[in-house]
Image (cartoon, rainbow, N blue to C red; front, top):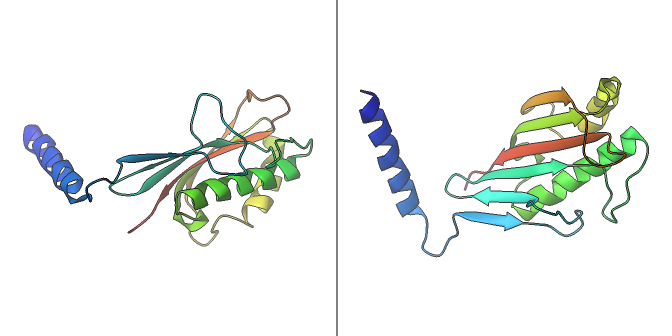
Length: 152
């Protein structure tokens, strides 16, 4: 029975792959304008079929690379960076199905929620995780990553 399920999965994957038009890349790696340039990763990976979009963790640096000291400004910049990433992949905030939040201080959770309400659909919010973490970037107060799914 288990083998039948595994084989069915391989057959379905083969059918989906065959339905993809020739020349369509299985993955697109995108580093959109206005988002700080990464070192050692890609800001957005879009995969076909299924159009799942994976947005790497975004911090609070503005499009010019400056990192404000206050949490609210970093949060707004983070969501604007996510918007740029989603747009580059043909998606929008409404397409997010999973979002992960990493905060250096959980006392900023209420402010995160206030800023998030301006961007993320609150009537049908995506699955999410909030974790207190030590972040790598000096002065970073939060990092947010997202997974979106686009119907075609």
